[in-house]
Length: 374
Image 1 (cartoon, rainbow, N blue to C red):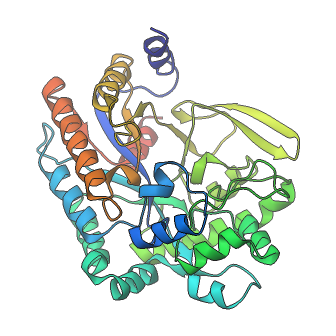
Image 2: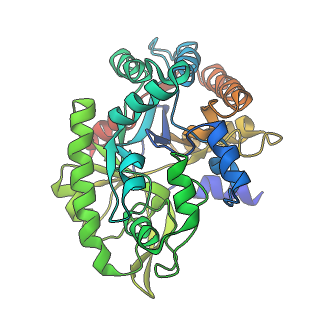
């Protein structure tokens, strides 16, 4: 009962539409978490404290991952005859493990294209042709990538651990992975995956530089500018909002409610609704449907998602479905991909069967619709 009440109340404020729009916003594409199952097993043997499905199952998307995803998305079309579309929030870069293994001087990165090229040489059966398939997915309209950051890690935290000679970090670098690294005492509340997490306001200047660099790399990689942005782990200092607007970002994907750290012990509560917020030059996108099928395989993730979609449509809101790549990747465990995509197919079928007038659109298309009516 509490869940039903919450799912309805959260959809009341903000931008409305009579169209039944469905958007799949899926985080973490392009990010290296685990290099391979062999690398994961070596790290476990070495005592790296891996925890949760991201540390155990998440890896850069393989050719097989993309092929299977495209097949699933193509099986279902809306009343316009359009297949389901994926809005992957992507990273522009990953750690350059080779350079970092040679020196503890500082963090170095490689472009996502270099990551795919390296892995295609090291693991050709999984990564040969994967980047080319990415391009095919974009050209066919199955993929409409948007910006998730330059990399899915906190550079300041990583550099402090490098200088301190962290054993866990060294094991990760040796295994071309970024998992189970843990916190840094000098940065309270900042996790290693929190790309723009802060302890002190003084760190914001560096985040501006990283975002600007990441957006330029995004345009270089994909051939267009990013319209929307969601930060890793939803950590972002409010001072960065006007900067992102100046960089051309038109919408920021935010939680309905969060606590933003301003500086050390100073925080601010933030409530967000879909549409334009007072005093901001950007739109806020707020996901209102959760779809995480591999988080708990015994839980009815499809049923929950359909109930939340119903609540969104009841209040004339687009259904913004939130998910992560880990649900659909099989490089570490093929059964994980099979299970996640089977659930996705059931969700897609449920959407078009229950709402024949549903429309599949991308996150940037949603931004365009809101802008055209605001």
